[in-house]
Length: 600
Ligand code: M6R
Image 1 (cartoon, rainbow, N blue to C red):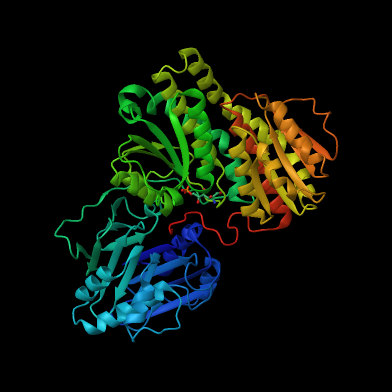
Image 2: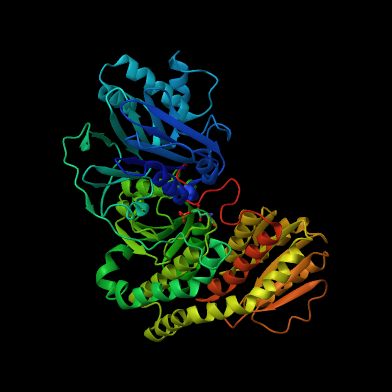
């Protein structure tokens, strides 16, 4: 994981590096550091915790005599969170930062006596190894080539070697891009950030070793020309406006981003669907793939495809799919879902199925991501940048994308009539206003429920059919931002084990939309209540009086299968948000997490 920045030849190295690191904080915030450098010296400042600590610590450092800077914000993988394990790793001749994992660091550490045996960080081992190579080879380029050949894993390194005043960028798996104008270069692990600096960009590719020397950029090992292309410019998403947290802002942005995503789909993206997409859907099977919240979106997608088409469809966690055997003789379409387009598990699973010659679609919110560059076909979501670590608007836009896709396939394959297609597209078009109303009306209730949660020891979420993945998502939201113990279950599974968890100190949130499973879902809630568990029912059916015990009923708007997941997601986002607010946790940057998980 982690975020990397590098800047060469700018007037304000330190402040710009810190400004970029703040934007990269979503990739981890365990510790941070910068190295300022020139042909004469290297100066490194590191601190534990967020970038604001680094900013304070480097306040009095003057950067005028330096020609460049590299910086890093860390999400710890190897080695505890402390100042020593913070990047950059530096000595008087070398400084480097890394994003990723060096898988064979243990072997390298054992092989060379020059590498201390007590260090735990894979990057620190790499640092000692590279210093050793620089001493061994007179030519630093040679040392870098040997280094790159030996290390194994998914990584991006940014390195400065003072001896020959050279700057190197190495990529294998983890994203890293460069923007350039005249003498000045900006290097970053998030290419969207670079649009604020130069309007041209170069995305490094796996296996690349790029060298910058005296403002000239070149490949170290490929005899190719580096061509910068036009950069996409982004609006500034790092402004909370009047909201206390990005998460709340992003919850409130859902009506507008759902509206713009739906309008792009109907007026542009899915127009003439058959001509554009038919070739992808002529196989035996569809597999939907994602991690975390995106996995929950995949599960909803499975219910949509199941309902609107006759396709055989299933869902896989990206981190598991990658290590499974896939039938080569079947024609499978894999649909990958990822907000960031950078999640390593998903990216690797995508590369794996491509290698097996299967077809792939990527649904992503990031138009400049690694997955876009790998995908056969991309379906963008237009949620705009999501800054809060807990995914909200990106999730509902993923649902919208999958709902449209399933409807288009159903219409193309004639498993649904034109009339059903139109009715459902109509429902999706009306969604933004329905959600806007729901956010407004449910906010006071969410505040009340959040106080009830404070009295419980654990909170469970249950749902059936298309409400089941929403129960999982509600539980994930709650645990990730409030740290409360929580699980999501399919309602029908409770009696097979999880009901043993229920006692008077638990709260179970029951999602009970009006559908074929309504009666059965009511019984599942009843079974929990009969064991003294407190329950909160979210339902569009008004008369729930037959359930006894300590219950609270939230009236939901009337729903159809297509809009059920959206409608039931909103209250759960708000409950999690207000409970975390009540608990006083770091809502936008919860402990131990990062927005973009670029390690396996
Ligand atoms: O960027 P991605 O959609 O691929 O990210 C996948 C998960 O890491 C992400 O959804 C994670 O579960 C969020 N923290 C959930 O809020």
